[in-house]
Length: 597
Image (cartoon, rainbow, N blue to C red; front, side, top):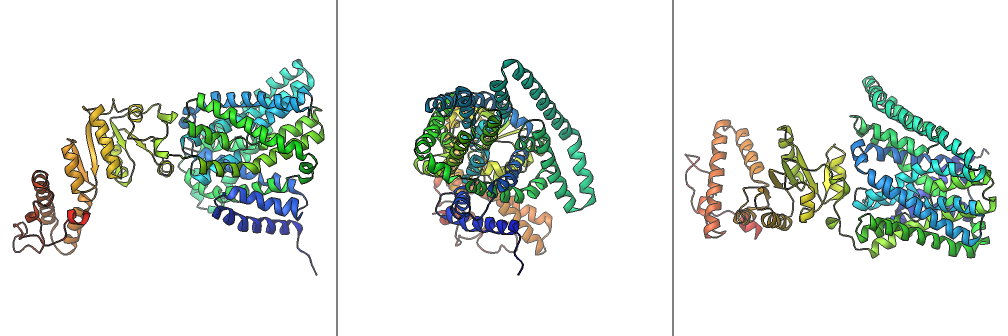
């Protein structure tokens, strides 16, 4: 009887593990990442059903590559430039400070010489991009203030692999040789990045235009994979990471009209391969190395994670993050990362680390990865986060337009189309990360911020705005914003979305310049079109609509003076015959006010 191919069996095992573990751990509130890790540990170190986990890990690293490409697609170059402070200042500070602290810990434990301790310390200072970004994605926090800052730190860590690999050469060969090597490596990496930027600007979009004209869906998919994998390999040959190459390719295509189709094509590969990556980390966990060095690992792994987390927390606080944001970043990035594997292996080849020490460090990194999702889940339960009260994000730089729109609900989205079509620039702020993420997929630039805070309004350019349009969904939030603006910015012209008639009357009492009930015009237009479908002429329905608007306005004025129950005699409650605009009899219908009550 023929036996199945081992590769086929291993694929089935991984798929079965993912299907069983991910829903279970998601249901328990622990997240899919921890589920994939647990499945990998059971399949590999415990049951030993897969003989070569390194091969699985090597293939599944493409999941990280695709993840960075999709992130690049969502980050336009202008947005990346606005993050430069967090990337190069906070990122540099994190790598240097964490590296020095962890170098001291490694030297104190005596696991290596001072040169090896430097490599160990800076290798452990790098975090796992795949783990951190997947946890952010599962929590829906990718576009939160702390999520963007965490991503900036991770991005610099990916860049730092070049000087760290040069550091291995420096510690092995001496200053003269290493300096020459570093200059050469840096020049090659810089040339590769410039080449990627030029190719992305002048070649990629025309390429996809030509392919799109063929109408062959499979060719577009093949082109997407070619761009991602080709750019990844190019950066790897230049000494950078494959993930960095894919990220740059995504950045170059962020403003392309094909970016949504590319994202849809790559997303299934990204999800499946990233799940395989987390399982491969579990498969690679060396239980024998952990058991033989149990005391050192039990003490060392929590110690290095705590030290790294404290450094990150302090740096984020110095950089202006709120306490909860800094704590969230600290529990998100304390683990070691994939690049640590590369650095430790290179150090063994250079004679700076013994194979046993490298195995111990790799086991520690793997264990720290496994502990991170659990730590993040616990921290999320302990930290009381209020997304609507986050600090002003750094990308408020450049805000300020003729119109400041607070709230990007469906009402605001429709209103913004009129303004943009009329050639007016609009600054939009909203406090929903999900809404900002969804709007960004359509090319909208929205600033994250809470419109009930004075400092947010100032940062968004309220002092330069000619009109402030308040389009928030909740009546109480709208009232707080209106009251704040009336108190602190009395000269601002206020246009406000109203919830209902009662809200309209209260807004008029606050002396807003213009308000509109969210359902008034849509209801009038719907009624007019229905009348036209029944045979009434367009001119007559327009006249009827104008009369209803007039009567509605008169009712509002009466209700403002006499109370909400006044003016009922102006409602139509039965067909008007023979003249459509005659005064109706006493109302017997359920009114908007009664419905609200």
